[in-house]
Length: 316
Image 1 (cartoon, rainbow, N blue to C red):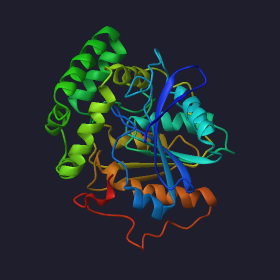
Image 2: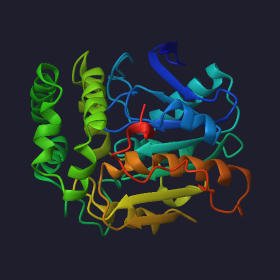
Image 3: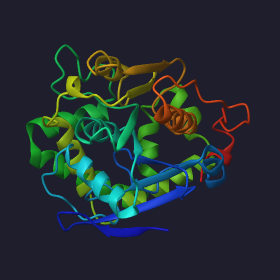
Image 4: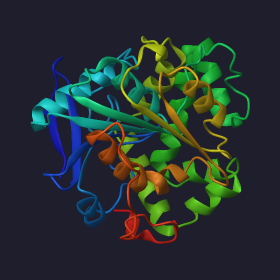
């Protein structure tokens, strides 16, 4: 059930919640392009994990009002406004792909007594990352969009407007275009019928009111983020598949060296879309870690973590 709420600056933000309302709250920040309706674990699995999963459309996506000129840091204010509206005290945040920079903004800007920990799955590093070849290992389509965003704002608007119109005519067209650039690991994940259907649905929902969310994400990633990674004090875990060609794993490795106390998992044989498969395990560990800095790893002896993406019971 989608709830459209008002946030502190007067905009509307669309929010979906899944799982146990009495469970541990975790915000899931979606990818680029994406929406609140992206792939998530099924409700029974979330109940078993004791997780209340909260997702919302970033400004300009889905049913959320656009926030022209928004910055990565604006996500932290929206998360707090949503948490306050839902009566949530302490919570965690996980950002997937384009949600990663926004999750790190939460880590930098939300006080520790509210935010317990943050996970970033296949995230991007700041575009001004010193010592990182930001484009190395990145697909041509992403490289072209990000280069346009840095050099010609009008051109990136035109390019993403055209691409968004193609997606609205055929929501499967984006996956088809990405297929040509995918690693074998990503093709394995996205070959699943249930996952492809859910991705088409989230792309359609994301862009139904226009390309603005996609445009504003890409522009925000190429601008200064507005916070320093080395000032983050919230526990942060970074996860990346070593075959990712959409946001290269070197981005997470670079950030892990600069975020104090950060931990990192670089998974062999995994790529970008494996972030959907790893999510239940990440959520379980975030709940455990929220209780104690010295907590033991989450126990999956009950079969709560489904290894194969061919088992659609993981996905709603």
